[in-house]
Image 1 (spheres, helix red, strand yellow):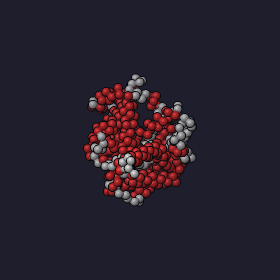
Image 2: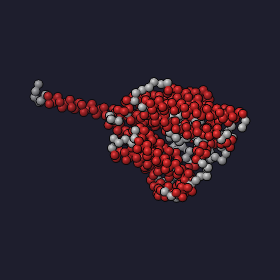
Image 3: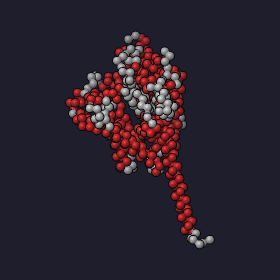
Image 4: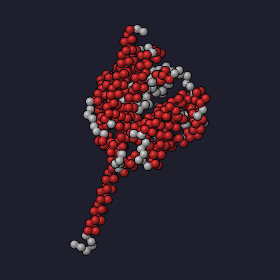
Length: 492
């Protein structure tokens, strides 16, 4: 190996380790201070960074950049990506590490003092999510055409369709988070807990039927979130057992099960594919036969965790004058405008009016033998560079950390589970690689703000206003009744 490559190897190892150390410090302090929401956020982000970004970097160093040489990525390019990631996470972490600490006392009180308006909001989210996640099991499986056209934008025909679409989006992630928290809460009514469990089960079955490993990870992650939030060790044990059971099935799910659902007759409901799924996951021979040909778990994981390698494309695009500029953020800012009124509206995260201009598609379009509609993981730091070079790569983590500090402070002041649901929903921006984490491009935060924080915040305010009005009305009736008793008719 040339000396320059050896130098790159050393620095890639260092730069891939720095983010893990920074996030480990954040997680350690949150754990020491007993701040459960921060523990969840930092914990998931730590796992995300270690498993999907740091590990592939270490793997590349130990193997002498074999994976990179096979796709034409040079050690210098990889070093640039990891240098940008180390800078991004360091700035992000320093802002949060240097911020003042707050007492988690209010959070502990929240469980015992839940208002009617908050229960209505949380139960409503879980009910809507149950309709979405369980209801789609009765709809037809995806066809090959559906898969090939998943990148296309559907323009709603009328305002009603647009409102329905918004309602679905509203309960998709907040409902999943709320379901995880309520399912793990022993003080929640049993019927609501069963409804919450049906949400998680519905998403798990849906993901398994279509071989969507990311969806399986979402459910397991949400179970972990619920267990940590409620301090329920049995729930965490369930998540661990599910992981041990499901991970060996991944090759079979992504090959045999996926192709079986795609090959099903048009109109076949997902519920009718469940017997085939059960027969497969209970038959060791079928699972073993679903091996996708990749040798070894470590090698397979390193190949799939290609965010850093893909991100070299984003750096190259900016360096040759094809940067995204303000396009991705502009699309997020105008997200609220219905496309039926503005057909050529920019897309959040994209450089044009289609999904294909987004970074997760652009990185795949440069690869040989890759369909133009394929998606690939990228790093938030590389996305920032693609938008505005090193200047924006410095500014983006500072803005991200400032936003997260504001979210944490809001949640700790409020001491309400409904606010925690909103905070944790920001972990689900997911333009990176499908794993939950706090490190996302700025446009993703803006998008989540529009589709989650604003509508749920307004709904919570409306419910509290109604509850306050009812209390005032009841108090007035009580005072009037007391006055009538104290001053009988005919008495002056």
